[in-house]
Length: 305
Image (cartoon, rainbow, N blue to C red; front, side, top):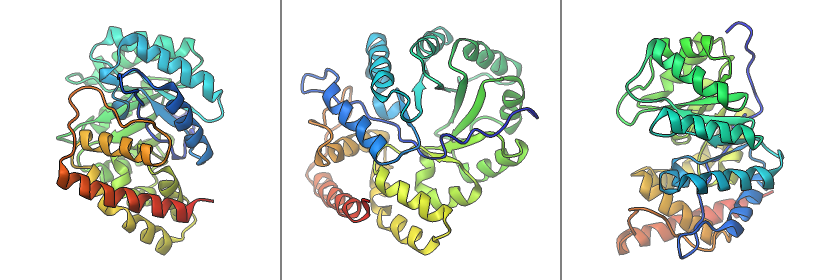
Protein backbone atom coordinates (compact mmCIF):
# COMPACT_ATOMS: atom_id res chain seq x y z
CA UNK A 1 0.00 0.00 0.00
CA UNK A 2 2.85 2.38 0.74
CA UNK A 3 3.84 2.40 -2.95
CA UNK A 4 0.42 3.45 -4.14
CA UNK A 5 -0.31 7.03 -5.08
CA UNK A 6 -3.69 8.71 -5.39
CA UNK A 7 -5.06 8.53 -8.94
CA UNK A 8 -6.72 11.89 -9.60
CA UNK A 9 -7.79 11.59 -13.24
CA UNK A 10 -11.42 10.92 -12.30
CA UNK A 11 -11.69 13.80 -9.82
CA UNK A 12 -14.96 15.62 -10.39
CA UNK A 13 -18.23 14.43 -11.92
CA UNK A 14 -18.16 11.13 -13.83
CA UNK A 15 -21.77 10.14 -14.60
CA UNK A 16 -23.17 6.65 -14.93
CA UNK A 17 -24.75 6.61 -18.38
CA UNK A 18 -28.22 5.36 -19.23
CA UNK A 19 -28.68 3.09 -22.22
CA UNK A 20 -31.02 4.66 -24.80
CA UNK A 21 -33.46 2.36 -26.58
CA UNK A 22 -35.50 2.62 -29.75
CA UNK A 23 -39.24 1.98 -29.62
CA UNK A 24 -38.57 -1.68 -30.41
CA UNK A 25 -36.20 -1.75 -27.37
CA UNK A 26 -33.05 -2.20 -29.44
CA UNK A 27 -30.11 0.01 -28.42
CA UNK A 28 -30.36 3.47 -29.97
CA UNK A 29 -26.77 4.25 -30.96
CA UNK A 30 -27.60 7.66 -32.45
CA UNK A 31 -28.94 8.84 -29.09
CA UNK A 32 -25.96 7.25 -27.39
CA UNK A 33 -23.61 9.32 -29.57
CA UNK A 34 -25.39 12.48 -28.44
CA UNK A 35 -25.11 11.38 -24.80
CA UNK A 36 -21.39 10.71 -25.13
CA UNK A 37 -20.84 14.09 -26.79
CA UNK A 38 -22.90 15.79 -24.07
CA UNK A 39 -20.87 14.10 -21.31
CA UNK A 40 -17.60 15.26 -22.85
CA UNK A 41 -18.83 18.77 -23.73
CA UNK A 42 -20.08 19.39 -20.18
CA UNK A 43 -16.50 18.82 -18.98
CA UNK A 44 -17.15 15.68 -16.96
CA UNK A 45 -14.07 13.96 -15.59
CA UNK A 46 -15.10 10.55 -16.90
CA UNK A 47 -18.07 8.27 -17.47
CA UNK A 48 -19.30 4.87 -16.32
CA UNK A 49 -21.12 2.46 -18.61
CA UNK A 50 -22.67 -0.94 -17.96
CA UNK A 51 -23.94 -0.19 -14.46
CA UNK A 52 -27.39 -0.17 -12.84
CA UNK A 53 -28.43 3.14 -14.43
CA UNK A 54 -27.71 1.61 -17.84
CA UNK A 55 -30.17 -1.24 -17.17
CA UNK A 56 -27.28 -3.63 -17.66
CA UNK A 57 -29.19 -6.55 -16.12
CA UNK A 58 -31.56 -6.35 -19.09
CA UNK A 59 -28.82 -6.44 -21.72
CA UNK A 60 -27.50 -9.64 -23.27
CA UNK A 61 -23.81 -10.50 -23.06
CA UNK A 62 -23.34 -9.65 -26.74
CA UNK A 63 -25.13 -6.31 -26.31
CA UNK A 64 -22.87 -5.43 -23.39
CA UNK A 65 -19.77 -6.19 -25.45
CA UNK A 66 -21.10 -4.23 -28.44
CA UNK A 67 -21.96 -1.29 -26.18
CA UNK A 68 -18.50 -1.37 -24.60
CA UNK A 69 -16.81 -1.48 -28.01
CA UNK A 70 -18.94 1.35 -29.40
CA UNK A 71 -18.36 3.68 -26.44
CA UNK A 72 -14.61 3.10 -26.25
CA UNK A 73 -14.21 3.57 -30.01
CA UNK A 74 -16.34 6.72 -30.10
CA UNK A 75 -14.84 8.41 -27.04
CA UNK A 76 -11.26 7.64 -28.13
CA UNK A 77 -9.71 8.39 -24.74
CA UNK A 78 -11.02 11.97 -24.71
CA UNK A 79 -12.09 11.29 -21.13
CA UNK A 80 -11.73 8.12 -19.02
CA UNK A 81 -14.39 5.44 -19.50
CA UNK A 82 -15.10 3.07 -16.62
CA UNK A 83 -16.48 -0.26 -17.83
CA UNK A 84 -18.98 -1.94 -15.51
CA UNK A 85 -18.00 -5.62 -15.22
CA UNK A 86 -20.23 -6.71 -12.34
CA UNK A 87 -22.06 -10.02 -12.68
CA UNK A 88 -23.72 -12.67 -10.56
CA UNK A 89 -20.78 -15.08 -10.76
CA UNK A 90 -16.99 -15.01 -11.06
CA UNK A 91 -16.91 -16.61 -14.50
CA UNK A 92 -19.03 -13.79 -15.96
CA UNK A 93 -17.05 -11.10 -14.15
CA UNK A 94 -13.82 -12.46 -15.64
CA UNK A 95 -15.35 -12.60 -19.14
CA UNK A 96 -16.34 -8.93 -18.93
CA UNK A 97 -12.96 -7.93 -17.46
CA UNK A 98 -11.13 -9.73 -20.29
CA UNK A 99 -13.34 -8.03 -22.87
CA UNK A 100 -12.78 -4.59 -21.30
CA UNK A 101 -9.02 -5.08 -21.42
CA UNK A 102 -9.06 -6.38 -24.99
CA UNK A 103 -11.05 -3.32 -26.11
CA UNK A 104 -8.46 -0.99 -24.62
CA UNK A 105 -10.30 0.15 -21.49
CA UNK A 106 -8.16 1.64 -18.72
CA UNK A 107 -10.75 1.40 -15.92
CA UNK A 108 -13.24 -1.27 -14.89
CA UNK A 109 -15.72 -1.51 -12.04
CA UNK A 110 -16.78 -4.66 -10.20
CA UNK A 111 -19.29 -4.84 -7.38
CA UNK A 112 -18.02 -6.70 -4.35
CA UNK A 113 -19.55 -10.20 -4.41
CA UNK A 114 -22.03 -10.88 -1.63
CA UNK A 115 -21.31 -13.37 1.10
CA UNK A 116 -17.51 -13.48 1.00
CA UNK A 117 -14.92 -11.63 3.03
CA UNK A 118 -11.34 -11.85 4.25
CA UNK A 119 -8.91 -14.05 2.32
CA UNK A 120 -11.55 -15.30 -0.14
CA UNK A 121 -12.52 -11.74 -1.05
CA UNK A 122 -8.89 -10.84 -1.75
CA UNK A 123 -8.45 -13.99 -3.84
CA UNK A 124 -11.60 -13.18 -5.82
CA UNK A 125 -10.46 -9.66 -6.70
CA UNK A 126 -6.89 -10.71 -7.43
CA UNK A 127 -8.24 -13.22 -9.92
CA UNK A 128 -10.55 -10.67 -11.58
CA UNK A 129 -7.92 -7.94 -11.71
CA UNK A 130 -5.39 -10.26 -13.33
CA UNK A 131 -7.63 -10.39 -16.41
CA UNK A 132 -8.86 -6.78 -16.50
CA UNK A 133 -7.58 -3.26 -17.25
CA UNK A 134 -4.89 -1.73 -15.08
CA UNK A 135 -7.25 0.34 -12.90
CA UNK A 136 -9.90 -1.42 -10.81
CA UNK A 137 -12.75 0.40 -9.10
CA UNK A 138 -14.52 -1.74 -6.51
CA UNK A 139 -18.18 -0.97 -5.85
CA UNK A 140 -19.01 -1.21 -2.16
CA UNK A 141 -22.80 -1.42 -2.45
CA UNK A 142 -25.36 -2.26 0.21
CA UNK A 143 -28.98 -1.17 0.39
CA UNK A 144 -29.35 -2.13 4.04
CA UNK A 145 -26.04 -1.83 5.96
CA UNK A 146 -22.51 -0.35 5.93
CA UNK A 147 -21.19 -2.76 3.28
CA UNK A 148 -17.60 -3.99 3.27
CA UNK A 149 -15.74 -3.83 6.55
CA UNK A 150 -12.93 -1.31 6.90
CA UNK A 151 -10.52 -4.21 7.46
CA UNK A 152 -11.56 -5.91 4.22
CA UNK A 153 -11.12 -2.68 2.27
CA UNK A 154 -7.67 -2.12 3.74
CA UNK A 155 -6.72 -5.73 3.03
CA UNK A 156 -7.91 -5.42 -0.58
CA UNK A 157 -6.01 -2.18 -1.00
CA UNK A 158 -2.83 -3.71 0.37
CA UNK A 159 -3.01 -6.97 -1.59
CA UNK A 160 -4.77 -6.21 -4.90
CA UNK A 161 -2.33 -4.19 -6.98
CA UNK A 162 -4.84 -2.87 -9.53
CA UNK A 163 -7.32 -1.67 -6.90
CA UNK A 164 -7.15 2.11 -7.36
CA UNK A 165 -10.66 3.38 -6.55
CA UNK A 166 -13.61 2.60 -4.27
CA UNK A 167 -17.20 3.54 -5.07
CA UNK A 168 -19.05 3.65 -1.76
CA UNK A 169 -22.85 3.31 -1.80
CA UNK A 170 -23.90 2.11 1.63
CA UNK A 171 -26.06 3.13 4.56
CA UNK A 172 -24.46 6.06 6.42
CA UNK A 173 -21.71 6.45 3.85
CA UNK A 174 -20.40 9.82 5.08
CA UNK A 175 -18.41 8.61 8.10
CA UNK A 176 -17.18 5.65 6.05
CA UNK A 177 -15.63 7.98 3.47
CA UNK A 178 -13.72 9.71 6.26
CA UNK A 179 -12.55 6.45 7.84
CA UNK A 180 -11.35 4.96 4.55
CA UNK A 181 -9.61 8.17 3.57
CA UNK A 182 -7.73 8.07 6.90
CA UNK A 183 -6.71 4.40 6.93
CA UNK A 184 -5.44 4.57 3.31
CA UNK A 185 -3.60 7.86 3.90
CA UNK A 186 -5.75 9.48 1.20
CA UNK A 187 -4.12 7.39 -1.52
CA UNK A 188 -7.26 5.44 -2.48
CA UNK A 189 -9.56 7.29 -4.87
CA UNK A 190 -13.04 7.57 -3.30
CA UNK A 191 -16.21 8.05 -5.30
CA UNK A 192 -19.91 7.76 -4.76
CA UNK A 193 -23.22 7.63 -6.58
CA UNK A 194 -25.63 8.19 -3.72
CA UNK A 195 -23.17 10.82 -2.47
CA UNK A 196 -24.77 13.38 -4.78
CA UNK A 197 -27.60 13.62 -2.24
CA UNK A 198 -25.01 14.97 0.20
CA UNK A 199 -22.63 16.39 -2.38
CA UNK A 200 -21.25 19.36 -0.47
CA UNK A 201 -20.73 17.33 2.71
CA UNK A 202 -18.95 14.61 0.73
CA UNK A 203 -16.66 17.12 -1.04
CA UNK A 204 -15.79 18.62 2.34
CA UNK A 205 -14.92 15.11 3.58
CA UNK A 206 -12.45 14.78 0.70
CA UNK A 207 -14.43 12.48 -1.63
CA UNK A 208 -12.75 12.71 -5.02
CA UNK A 209 -15.43 11.95 -7.61
CA UNK A 210 -19.18 11.63 -7.89
CA UNK A 211 -21.23 9.40 -10.15
CA UNK A 212 -24.73 10.78 -10.76
CA UNK A 213 -26.71 9.82 -13.86
CA UNK A 214 -27.96 13.22 -15.11
CA UNK A 215 -27.70 16.97 -14.41
CA UNK A 216 -23.98 17.05 -15.21
CA UNK A 217 -23.99 20.82 -15.74
CA UNK A 218 -25.48 21.42 -12.30
CA UNK A 219 -23.35 18.89 -10.43
CA UNK A 220 -20.18 20.15 -12.10
CA UNK A 221 -20.98 23.69 -11.00
CA UNK A 222 -21.73 22.63 -7.42
CA UNK A 223 -18.47 20.66 -7.34
CA UNK A 224 -16.38 23.52 -8.73
CA UNK A 225 -18.01 26.16 -6.54
CA UNK A 226 -17.36 24.05 -3.46
CA UNK A 227 -13.72 23.22 -4.15
CA UNK A 228 -13.16 26.91 -4.90
CA UNK A 229 -14.70 27.71 -1.50
CA UNK A 230 -17.68 29.63 -2.88
CA UNK A 231 -19.86 27.90 -0.33
CA UNK A 232 -22.89 30.20 -0.39
CA UNK A 233 -23.24 29.90 -4.16
CA UNK A 234 -22.71 26.15 -4.03
CA UNK A 235 -25.31 25.74 -1.29
CA UNK A 236 -27.87 27.87 -3.12
CA UNK A 237 -27.47 25.83 -6.29
CA UNK A 238 -27.58 22.53 -4.39
CA UNK A 239 -30.72 23.60 -2.53
CA UNK A 240 -32.43 24.32 -5.84
CA UNK A 241 -32.23 20.64 -6.87
CA UNK A 242 -33.21 19.04 -3.55
CA UNK A 243 -36.82 18.43 -4.73
CA UNK A 244 -35.41 16.60 -7.78
CA UNK A 245 -33.08 14.46 -5.69
CA UNK A 246 -35.95 13.72 -3.29
CA UNK A 247 -38.23 12.55 -6.10
CA UNK A 248 -35.68 10.48 -8.02
CA UNK A 249 -34.19 8.80 -4.94
CA UNK A 250 -37.50 7.14 -4.04
CA UNK A 251 -36.49 4.09 -6.09
CA UNK A 252 -33.96 3.19 -8.78
CA UNK A 253 -36.76 2.61 -11.33
CA UNK A 254 -38.13 6.10 -10.69
CA UNK A 255 -34.65 7.51 -11.16
CA UNK A 256 -34.12 5.70 -14.48
CA UNK A 257 -37.52 6.63 -15.91
CA UNK A 258 -37.24 10.26 -14.80
CA UNK A 259 -33.70 10.54 -16.17
CA UNK A 260 -34.70 9.22 -19.57
CA UNK A 261 -37.58 11.70 -19.72
CA UNK A 262 -35.06 14.44 -18.96
CA UNK A 263 -32.77 13.22 -21.74
CA UNK A 264 -35.67 13.45 -24.20
CA UNK A 265 -36.47 16.99 -23.06
CA UNK A 266 -32.79 17.94 -23.46
CA UNK A 267 -32.88 16.62 -27.03
CA UNK A 268 -30.34 13.90 -26.30
CA UNK A 269 -32.58 10.78 -26.41
CA UNK A 270 -35.31 10.12 -28.96
CA UNK A 271 -37.38 8.03 -26.53
CA UNK A 272 -37.67 7.35 -22.81
CA UNK A 273 -38.12 3.62 -23.44
CA UNK A 274 -36.86 1.30 -20.70
CA UNK A 275 -36.43 -2.46 -20.64
CA UNK A 276 -37.68 -4.83 -18.00
CA UNK A 277 -40.35 -4.14 -15.41
CA UNK A 278 -39.80 -0.40 -14.92
CA UNK A 279 -43.22 1.09 -14.29
CA UNK A 280 -44.86 4.12 -15.88
CA UNK A 281 -45.75 7.22 -13.88
CA UNK A 282 -49.41 7.90 -13.13
CA UNK A 283 -51.06 11.29 -13.67
CA UNK A 284 -50.05 12.66 -10.26
CA UNK A 285 -46.43 11.62 -10.69
CA UNK A 286 -46.37 13.00 -14.23
CA UNK A 287 -47.56 16.38 -13.00
CA UNK A 288 -44.67 16.48 -10.51
CA UNK A 289 -42.21 15.17 -13.09
CA UNK A 290 -43.07 17.91 -15.56
CA UNK A 291 -42.59 20.60 -12.92
CA UNK A 292 -39.21 19.16 -11.96
CA UNK A 293 -38.06 18.75 -15.55
CA UNK A 294 -38.84 22.40 -16.24
CA UNK A 295 -36.87 23.34 -13.14
CA UNK A 296 -33.81 21.40 -14.32
CA UNK A 297 -33.88 22.93 -17.80
CA UNK A 298 -34.24 26.42 -16.33
CA UNK A 299 -31.29 25.93 -13.96
CA UNK A 300 -29.10 24.36 -16.65
CA UNK A 301 -29.82 27.19 -19.08
CA UNK A 302 -28.73 29.65 -16.40
CA UNK A 303 -25.47 27.88 -15.62
CA UNK A 304 -24.37 26.83 -19.11
CA UNK A 305 -21.05 28.39 -20.04
